[in-house]
Image 1 (tube, rainbow, N blue to C red):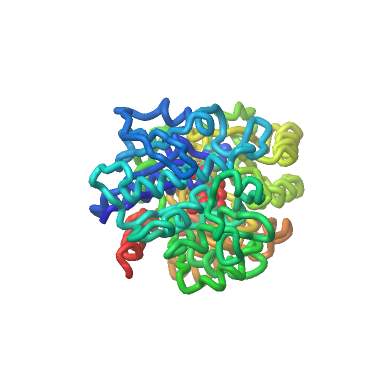
Image 2: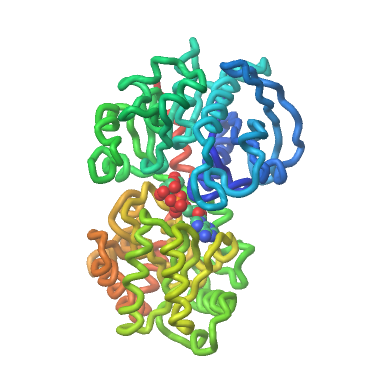
Length: 484
Ligand code: ADP
Ligand code: GLC
């Protein structure tokens, strides 16, 4: 089975969020199952600086006469050979893969990812004459939404599978742009990629692919409703027969508290969890220059890592914190970057409560690991969450998550009730309403159980014992690749 797996980011070369994690772990897991994978990503400047054995694989001639160079490279952590699409004017630039320094989408995103998608489709059908052809092309999110469309233009094309990681991002462009890129006229139709007078790169992926997957079973249901469908619910409903939900896994080598090189104190489920977590908590607080009173505090330490955006419900958390500081002994630590107003609000909270609230505005892989290990509770009040990885990292690190009942959060976290605790099923706290009072109430329930060490440890261990590795999910993808 030959598979081209294409994405716009892949850890450890370039990552802005969970897509980068998936584009690293899933191909690795597929290789482990014997699949012959080529991982295709853009040759961003950061990527070219991070790979080994870089060599030119060949030149592809795209429609409109444009030629692009393709590199092959390796990376010690990436099991599959890397194919990098080199279009310097579009990818050789510093910073974020999707946005400029001011946070605005790069103006040429439609062109960048259209060219990338066409190149991927040509590689899959062996335009370079390498003697390697894909049986399946696995595309991810809008940046590769045109891949299934380009494949549909070819006779005997490989099957295409399109995974939706986040339906809220679609990338649309107008007819002038469409025309300037010499794209086939029939794509500009209601049955193609046309979407309210524009072309949607997400829609082309949904419509032209042979199969659509999304990253949890719950999200696969949710996106067929107006509330979660972001305007695409009816298209997904019409394509429901080819829509499947497969929960993401996590990389259980990188995210393993027993071997995690970012941690000062490693631990495992059968060891002295409480002592190790306490030591990691002290180390985490010290990393934030916390004063002595914080280091001595006994209250639960609540954490969050992620993009500071509306999706993540981070505003609900920031609103919940001040009253909780008055009524409980909890402490809070948040790592993230995103919307300027949320960053400002977070910074303000930390400045106003230097003994109880800590923040790092920015991206830090190391701090993210230390936070998972050092916190007692992880708060993830997302308004929607296609899968979510951090709640699974938290479970693995013995840090019970408090989550909203949506998407992958609903599929991975079992609410602690007397019954679910007694049955040994509970691993966290779940609330339904996307509101500050509902989140506050769930956090208070968590704080209450935290004060009952025996019960708490049951929850902690239940989470730590659960297998969230990629194996099951990779097998599920493999059977979809094989299905007729
Ligand atoms: P999403 O993809 O919607 O951002 P996920 O939970 O699927 O959410 O994945 C987010 C990934 O990005 C996790 O691996 C998380 O640790 C990481 N991440 C997000 N923001 C930061 C940050 N500021 N510092 C370190 N890691 C971060
Ligand atoms: C998206 C989603 C997140 C998911 C990730 C990887 O960014 O927001 O929920 O875990 O993709 O699939």
